[in-house]
Amino acid sequence: MRRKPLADDALDAIDRQLINLLQDGFPLSNRPFAEVGEALGTDEADVLKRLASLREIGAITRFGPFIDAAAMGGAFSLCAMAVPAERFEEVMTLVNAHKEVAHNYERVHHLNMWFVLACDQPSGINEVADRIEAETGIQVKRFPKLKEFFIGFKVSA
Amino acid sequence: MTIDSIDRKILTATQGGLPLTAQPYAEVAVWLGLDEAEVVGRIKAMMDRGVIRRIAVAPNHYALGMVANGMSVWDVEDGVSEELGALVGALEFVSHCYLRPRALPEWPYNLFAMLHGSTRDEVEDHRAEVVAILGDACRSNDILYSTRILKKTGMRLTKGR
Image 1 (cartoon, chains in turn purple, cyan):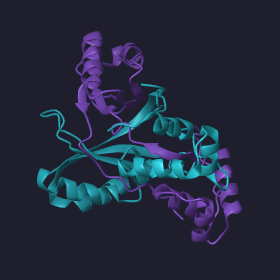
Image 2: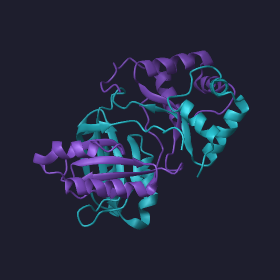
Image 3: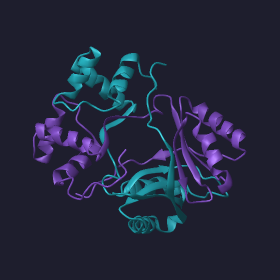
Image 4: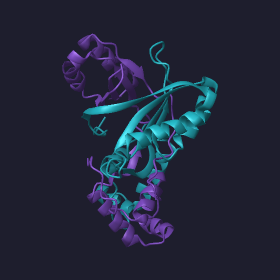
């Protein structure tokens, strides 16, 4: 994934409106891009061209259905550990070795390692977290989501 | 919540993205040997059941200039946490917003909101805006900046099951 900002003029006003509009949803119809084009004052071909270009330059990472893995029987939990500095690399290697660890970030805090566990079943979360505790001797704090508020991040238009 | 094998095929075929063609659902139908109406009907049913949350774009915050971000965490009174969480989640500079259990005594925070900005100063300005919104209902807050990505793998459906 691109980590560097694009040039200020890489996106025009319609590109920005398109990104904002498509964060909220996409029509389930025979000619959905035509509907989107109409909403933006342009046309189907232009929307398709812009999306291909936005993907090409890395302005968007994906476009398609977002699956709720929890609704399919999967389970997720944010987890955190307080890892002593001198053990950080060792513990990171032990944690990352678990395929259920989807993302892992070092953060500036007493709890300095934050990762997401993604498991096929809810029982998997505690099993993997317990195993990491046994392997590292460090407590794994578990922060499963109780409620999600999703509205979407907007690009300044 | 269950999905059948055809639903799973549709999800597997589209998890990399919808095709950028004028009739994307018809195209997916061709790939899978179904007709367009069935693909659309099944996607709609999966959305109604919450299996598909939405069909949408995921912006790349970094590419769009939002190179600074921090995980802000807030200790919000339980009675109003859902109402206030919804307000925070609706802010333009917030990408992910969740209520999570506290881990007392060490971790008093129950509301997590990822704040984005073009600089760390801008992220701190956003934090001040959230402080103002939460008011007296928030007892304390913190913000955790990331210094390193240690692992990042996409969520992928495993085939079968």
